[in-house]
Image 1 (cartoon, rainbow, N blue to C red):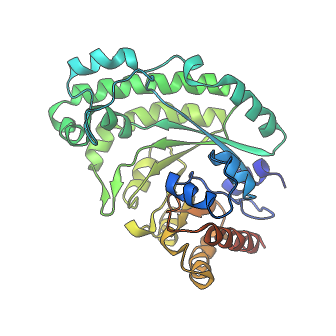
Image 2: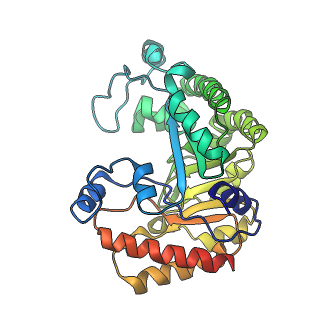
Image 3: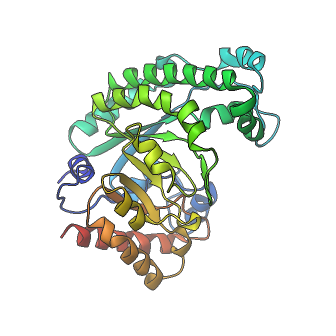
Length: 332
């Protein structure tokens, strides 16, 4: 069974020969630097190349950013470049590039050829309607703006929606992705950073306008948000979102409970990165925790965020060997 067929069948809860061997996230730069000292060829730095070298299935991701390279950098971490409507109007010339500027057509055409053979699974990532205003306003100002400047919040998300729809159509004219992720990061270890009322007012209307377009293309939309997603699953489910990643264990994410409560939602991730350097017994115990859901379909086991630099190259290769074993076992 080829990679694309396997992914699509699994996400339809159909039988497969094995579960995909996937690391959805790239690796921290410090992790790669360590591995270069421990056997990873030094010329391999790009995530897709490293995945193939390690024998993982061929997946490629493209994040299509609404920012031009000319957008000024914020004055500090967590700060913004557009805290008022006047600020936003001033920086708009540095936002929303044309599709031909945002998409590397030559690369995507090459991906489309490999996707057509079934060898490659393609996905895109777009800024979500919580993530994007936060990056422009800064963390603190963004949270106040739900109450103090709703007009600005809606203006940003209306423009983001228009951009996302334009680049989606342009990308799909070259290559239709198999799934996609919206970058949101709107949760922490105690749940979402906003209430459902705020979600329904400031985010849901925009998702309701883009998710149907994704489904028309046959693309599965996933939400990429760290933290505890338990409350978010039905919120996003109501606007048609199909899945979530990465399901951070340290934030209390319980994959089995999520599957019981939302049996048709898809998931990627959930493997506790904190056990990856604790030896075979600990890694096996973590796969045993995930195995019941692995057997049910609609779920790809993968690291619950980027592999930390405390994981050696040997540790990671052991993790991959055991992943392959359990991915085969789950399909039997």
